[in-house]
Length: 301
Image 1: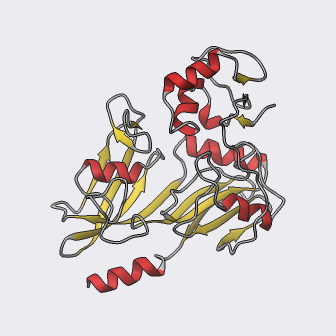
Image 2: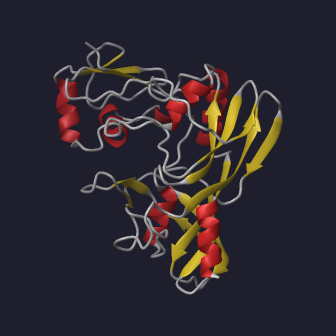
Image 3: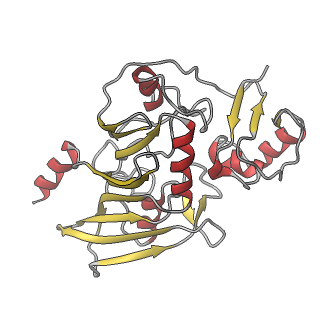
């Protein structure tokens, strides 16, 4: 019995099978464990036995047949969605802090995907059976703008724009310490941490990652900054800011010891700009900081 199937998207093309699964689906397991599953035939591609170093192609279907693999049944769960924009092709929504975007093997609570399924039957399926409509993601405790594709055509267009770094994303972050400079660029490659599987880290062998930042306002021990992403690596802003000794405030994974405030990092996806291939125009959307973020800044003043 196939317990899980994963459809390979354009973004994952040319990645090694074992590395792709290691970084995206088996974060609590070793790479050697995944390689053994592939060698034993418990993981196949297009229902065929392949080598651990098989290079993925777009639309490949990976099947996993191990009893310990936890799969959450996707069912519509009504929830209040903050829709910023919607047309026949896509949705732009403002994700709240604390909401996970899509199901994972280690997470069984309701996610944004469950809410989307209750909201509309029009969702692309290129991201895989457990990620309908999802073109990109935000961390659980990062709030802000997210694109959702209603069909496969728009999903492909948006994925290609992400791949070519044509979609502009701007974030607001409250970080530790004061900056000497007014603005700067962090150009440092990122990969999965070799020992702490839930973390990413800066390493010479990682994938290229570039973040531009500029100071908005300085406080006593904290600084409010704006970040523009050139690339979109997992945890990129959080990793890059930790790397330059300005970790995001209240970040439980990359922050300074025990967070002073519970509830996760103060990071908000404020603005997103992309080309709409059907409307033939550049669209830009922006949302204000959530109330908890604004209130904390007022207290700092």
